[in-house]
Amino acid sequence: QLPLSEVLHVRNTGMHLELSVKGQSQPTHLEFGTADERINWERYLNLAAEVLVPESERADRETAKAAFRAQEIEERRALNEERK
Image 1 (cartoon, one colour):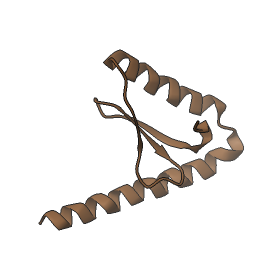
Image 2 (cartoon, one colour):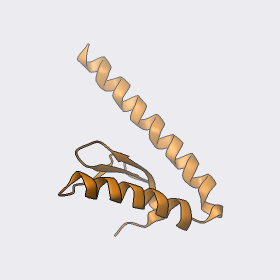
Image 3 (cartoon, rainbow, N blue to C red):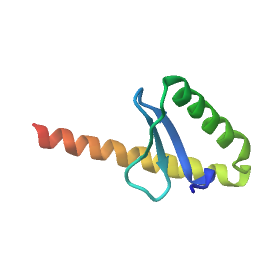
Image 4 (cartoon, rainbow, N blue to C red):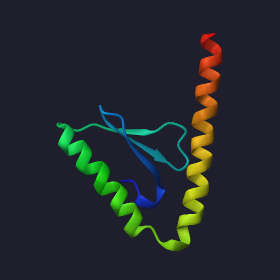
């Protein structure tokens, strides 16, 4: 189980959904049987987060989301440097 308030971002990669989760350095992957299921679940998760996460938690969630994005960028930058 994963509390919705811990999910920072849902990304559809075309193969699976990636959930960026507070306190995890790597995204959680969800796989679905069909593209329609994946698209629907992405929409449902984003809608649920919009509606169910209390206003009082949104600022903290946005701060955590920005930190997660910065960490992803730094990891990609380091990986690109290793490839050079």
